[in-house]
Image 1: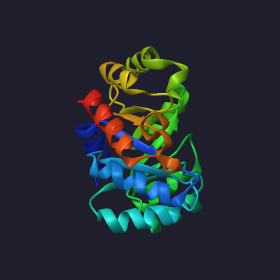
Image 2: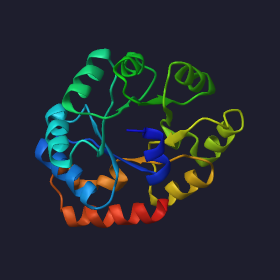
Image 3: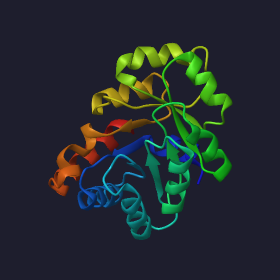
Image 4: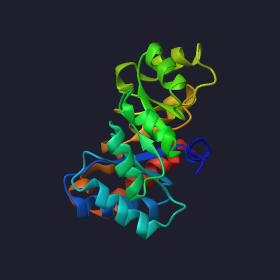
Length: 205
């Protein structure tokens, strides 16, 4: 899987973080059915690795399913074994180097210019600008000046309106958690999740 191409094409990464494994799996499958082409399951979710395994079995090998909040080398290996096709970190972490060793693309968390340089030099496929809400779209625009060739994916506090603003300021894609998932991660109505997914997909087109 070419993560950069997937992000560039689809522009939306859904982030599933749930205390309920059954609800998490339902959310992942509902997102996929709704046309959301990239989903990460945070390893802070209950039974996250099993959710990834079951989602991978249901969605097939070509679907862009990843693991989020991957911090350690052990986390990276476990996520790969479960079927994650890419890794996402909240910050610079040992999982970045291990992802490279495993041949998995890594969306590496960074906020400051120094962290962006470190993530790039460490082999990050793209930069997860996190938490994006601290600086907003204007901060992303400022970062784009010294790093015009870096692929940024803002994450943290991105709603449907904000998604468009980040993309207009040069984001490759946006990552969205609770504004998209809502109560679906606790067993909420899948129909409501489908409606939110449609709204976000319209916002990033």
